[in-house]
Length: 340
Image: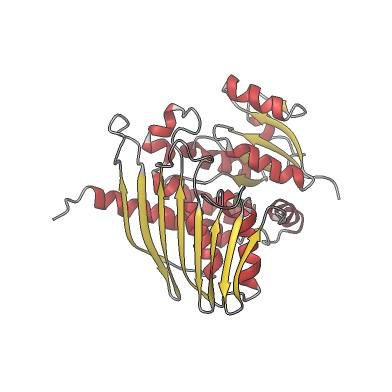
């Protein structure tokens, strides 16, 4: 099989490196990239010296040898890139969020259905986290029975790198529940097997950054499907001395046990990341997941070749973003309503 040739358009978020690496690990070839920002382009070229920088994205869209476009552009700009790529017959791998408005979601859905291309989002807190992948294997094997509740916590450090101006402009990043919490929504859908869900309650606030009025530094919401419930909390309050960008956690409650994942750190405990704790009728177990395989990249490449949906069903990719957008909309409405 000829290696999949792919290109990047928009490299504003550092997640682009994880997207590229996931594809390259699976045997794909990065041919070129487009980025108007010279500083970002220089760093990207240093990491991938064989990729040619092009000044016009049309050089990528119109290259029939390129089968996939990946992007981590400014969130509000991603939909246009995805639509152009699919209209030119290419599959798409986006950073989260894949879009920032309901209008963009509707437009992407229409183009995806009409063209038959794959529109995928690399929800890295699932597909690039080895402990979360391991949890999927355990749940599939029946280790905790049927999952009936998830608690997903996504704290982040606002100072873990120099943030660009767009990061503080809500119309460009989409709001904290769109920008971050789509991770946790996708995991709720994956682990519970839900094909439909609704947002029960939602909140967003700027609690500690009055100098950045466009920033939402805290958000949470409840969601439910016919057979499960979930709670999501995301924030920008990771302490500066925490030795990672955030103490990401996921708890899965099943009918026969539970799993807790410490994705990035086991505070004051075991060293490293990717810790999974399983409690069920057989006892208590700890799994070091640092050697767990990450199959997403090769599954996506196989899906492109075979026109299948093994990496992630198209419906779940869209539903995760739809629910994140609905949570954001409800939280925005609640923020303008006084508490009595």
